[in-house]
Length: 124
Image (cartoon, rainbow, N blue to C red; front, top):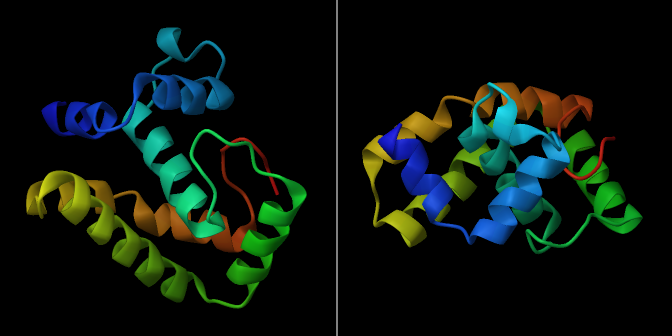
């Protein structure tokens, strides 16, 4: 729980609440991994080269879809791991425990990105 709180606390409250409310407007009353939802949104924003607070426009969507179709799920996973490593290194000073913990959801996310099926402010 403390690891998740560190991740959530690394982003401004408005961005966190915005990401979570897009996933589920009633997120405060739900039982799901808030950290995983935010991390997915952050990683997808990085892949689309868009700010976390900005909604994805059709060009972002097209770019991500084209990018994902050119790669296997293994290559997508490698890229997600690389991005996550840089994120943890920059925001948490190479915290290996946090990196390893957050990597747990990446295999699932890589498959969903490859298949165009994930949650953020849009759905492919």
